[in-house]
Length: 424
Image (cartoon, rainbow, N blue to C red; front, top):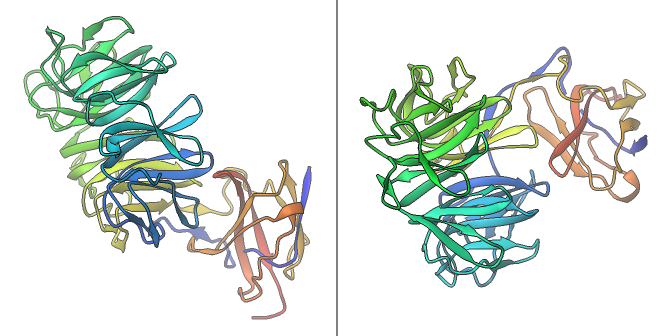
């Protein structure tokens, strides 16, 4: 059990407050599109077509630590667009078009710099996935990496790869693969391809995600004799089915987060209700997150207990947010949320000097965050060597606040703190 001594304060306004759900910007956002996001080694990495993230000049790739932006691009990355990120053998990979010298489409990050994974001849990689311990990539064809070189498995435009029920599903915009009829989606067992029912007709598949042991596919397809729905449907393993009343528009991303399926793209309506280019599906009903985003959504991620959305937009819930935004969920400080009151502050009330017990991990490198009743971050500070913290929060009004300790993006505990510092 570790003890952390605080030489100043933390806190949330009096009574029985709740932090209100709301959309917020992310450090001034980026100057152009953010395609995808991935949490890696405690930071949120983003890929896209931007050259600036907040005040930082970068090129296609950047990382966010919950407070500030940092560049992660190599000096040799002078052209192209980063379309996505994936973890493989513990390392971070980025894929896209012309990421190094205008030609290489897949690169690997060693924590300091990026290096090429060789030329695969595709020119562009739209998606990548790990299947049976091997890396697969899809673009104008689909390929497999053997550790030193790429091998081609088939032609046709591939937009999405997803592992489902022990097989790799490959989808995009094609009607055949290696001479066999495959309507925009196929199943690969590691040796051969197989059809997936009648496939997906009258359009293309742009994304896939497994949710509740069913494979959801989204894209630009229309309802027809072979498709039970437009833009979004699910494969049970044997049949195609609808997802409620479905989506009115194009679906660009599907992400299973926090026990729900998050759907993003270019659509105003989901399940008959206005949603603003993104919606949440719980397996039975559709819901929205405020008024959503004002233009296309291309990715989601869960980071430091908040939902992040990215794409090509400039407002989120009516708030200015350039191409990336975070949704801070409503949290009541009296409910039994994750790790609430596992951290013990004493004395309570505090005059600004107190001790926090209950942190099982080494305190050094942890982050202390303090929110008020509306969910606003009042203070965020790193814990220095030896666990000493000086938050210099004497300006905060007396009352109740919520404190949270995180490390590498993961919450270690939360607690209430009542401040009585002798001033009002």
